[in-house]
Image 1 (cartoon, rainbow, N blue to C red):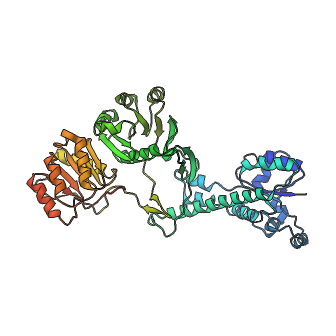
Image 2 (image 1 turned 180 degrees about the vertical axis):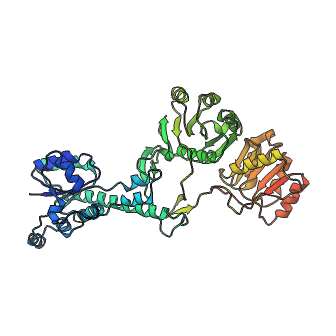
Image 3 (image 1 turned 180 degrees about the horizontal axis):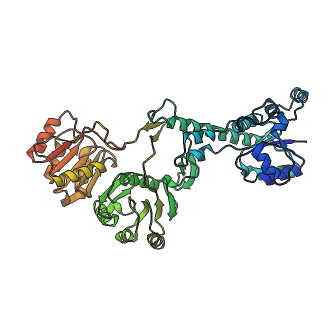
Length: 506
């Protein structure tokens, strides 16, 4: 009589599968909770403790870790191994059905404690899967309820599960234990925030959606740190599936607005922040953000840090937008968007601190990793460097521009007023970035302020900005020619702040 060993947390399809095995003449052996679930349907089940003649101990934490269990699983189909099993009065185990405690789901819950997480680290289940998978030439390993029907169809037909199928099931089991251990490793490393860049780094990502790639000949998918997560940790409320480009743009936009206390709007297209503004309401801020670069705003995405209400929807006018990210959507605004903008993806993302400890970028044969730029470091300054100090309106505008500039791809130039960008430039060199920002600003550059993510190397950038009417600059400083750059600003009666902090974004 073939023997099946059950130890499952996820009991999806369990009873039906076990009933079918029993009808086919299989003997069922199960541990504690699994055995109770099967007996509720009047199935005859042998307790694992009966098999081993040893009760579960330590509150059930030690149940299956016994030589007689693993001898039944690991015995090969040889005369020597079978004879040795008979000497211990142990029957071979031909099928292992096992899935693991929900460690990943547990650590994905808000506010979970370390003790709660540790209690969900499965020991015996991982060992069962590895033992069965190692001996796949004889043992069938089932760790996924979706495979039950496949195996039953073979057994009901009177067939034998072929070697290739058993090998595939074993590979799946090893993938499960690999990802499980990797998740534990990553969690334990993540408990120590001081080790942001460890010598070895474990990462488990779960595919949560197939998405449209940047180009038709490519394939793309969206992955998350937990298997049931939504896009960017949010929830899609309506609209088409995300594309690779739109997902990137939403991430940039949400990262930009989430740190502003005032109602704030960011517009992003193809990886470039094109406009950003604050206001009494997000509906008031949106036209200012669009005005920063109206051409690029069309076809982009919008992120806001307040509820998307009907007033905001009206403020969009006929602007074509591919996606909106917001902490909430008012019901009437959501209905209006669904009816009038069916091709607009609506993504709700809860406000709150960003839990990301690292940024990663794929490169050939590896990954670049760095801690995220979350703002000025403790050693940053806000030091006037010129003879003329910023006026109060200039000060407000400089602080706004400085907060925006770290979200712009380097080399970054932001021209702004106290509540809106009027021109944004990004280019391989700072002068071209400045030319682009001035071109987009046009006459609005006169009286605006300028922020740049890294220092000016020569006075020519300050001179060009001054000639266009820019009245104040904020920059990291630290160039060899700082004195000449300050002198150029003084000649034009410009105010300049040096921060000793840079915000390069690649």
